Image (cartoon, rainbow, N blue to C red; front, top):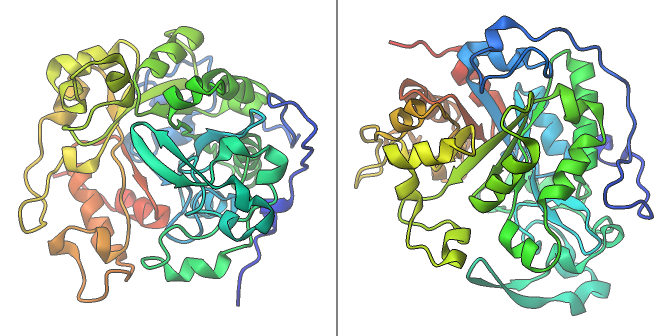
Amino acid sequence: MKECHVSVTSYPYNHTLSPHSIYPTMIRIRILGLPLALAGLFSLSACGGDGGDLANNGNILVIGHRGASALRPEHTLASYTKAIEDGADVIEPDLVATKDGFLVARHENEISGTTNVATVAKFAGRKTKKVIDGNTLEGWFTEDFTLAEIKELRAKERIPQIRPDNTQYDGQFEIPTVAEIIALAKSMSAKTGRTIHLYPETKHPSYFQSIGLPLEDRLLTALAQDDYSAKRAVIFIQSFETANLKTLRGKIGKNHPTYRLVQLMDDGRVQPPDFVLAGSKRTYGDLMTVEGMKEVAAYADGVGPNKLSIIPQDSSGNLGQPTALVGNAHAAGLRVHPYTFRPENNFLPASLKSNASAATRNPDGLAAEIQAYLKAGIDGFFTDDPAVGRRAVDTFKRS
């Protein structure tokens, strides 16, 4: 039987509101004083939000990557809800802008792979080609749609060949706004009795700046509209670019009680998009060095590297020896939250795969992979399957 997740349409929606308005108003949550155990996590001060849940399991964070995207179509309220129910400390929305300036959750601003837009006849003429961060893409882009039009679309599974079970939910769920995600986290915090924190990513910030839809102020304004996201939950703002994180640091200051900035890092040979625009030849690899991490620490609180930059795989696809990345980051005072840990055989190291198809979900293999990284000293991790991530953390024993 197909599951119908009513929470995705239970929030008030009014497309006549301004991009900086927040729609839902939900129950206020009584916040207790910040536990002393949290003092070491990103230096949160006692005057800030309720970060007590972040102190669980030695401060190792289970971050629901696009929600519980192994079990529900990504970046839907159903996926975020499942992640919270499965034990995620934090949920992660990737944010892009609409034509009228609202922030919505999609992994990319090109949405043909994650929505039904290609089948909607009235939008056929919106198909176009654009260059995003140096890559030519063809499809439908959020910045060409108003929020009201985006709300006419429905989500679908991005990788159906690997996650066929998720296709049963195709067409059921709306594309959520950042306001609706904040409201969901707030509501689920009240329901579960633990604070659900947020990890928004500003996607393609230089591109959106170039077309007159800068993301930074829109995000900060949205966060400020609700006391939950303004003061109570910890907000980790992440980006693959450096310039917009520096801009955000200037806006929020160096000692914000609940906002943290995280520098995402691709493969060490890749350049940050804003470096390319500035004519720099430097790469993410340059930021992973001792001196590079000190540079990052001047504007960020943590780094989010590709997991293979921490433990590379050998020619057979097996885990090798850890690099110096974690040590370099910790020496600079930065926390390390690598991405992405996925439960299917397709994504696991060779020695941890089961004797089944690439699409077979392999929780034991994923738990073992995560624990190898926990042993390497990471402080949290992005996972598509938070239930397995929670099990891996709860059963982990440092040697």
